[in-house]
Image 1 (cartoon, rainbow, N blue to C red):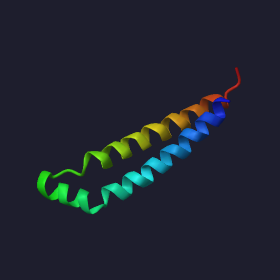
Image 2: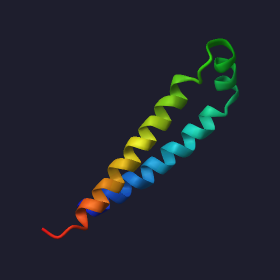
Image 3: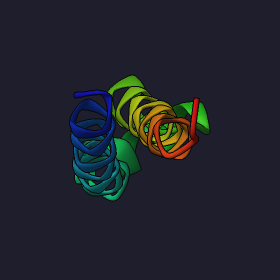
Image 4: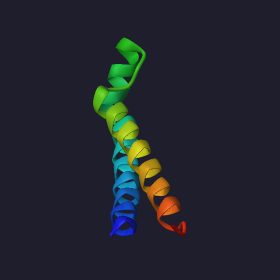
Amino acid sequence: MVKAISIALIVGGIVLLYFGGQAFNSVSSEVSRVFTGSPTNKAIMLIVAGVAATIAGLTGVALSGRKR
């Protein structure tokens, strides 16, 4: 059960990273970078959430493979 949740977190994290990359390269993010020097909050949050979910999933897979 833990392994299935971990794999779902990895897949969800990769999807979030993909959409974060798309948002980072969007026109609105480019405009935001011109005026503020940083991309939109949406792009940043998607990338951070994707990294966190992927790391949590990888940790779960690594720990579920251990013998108790």
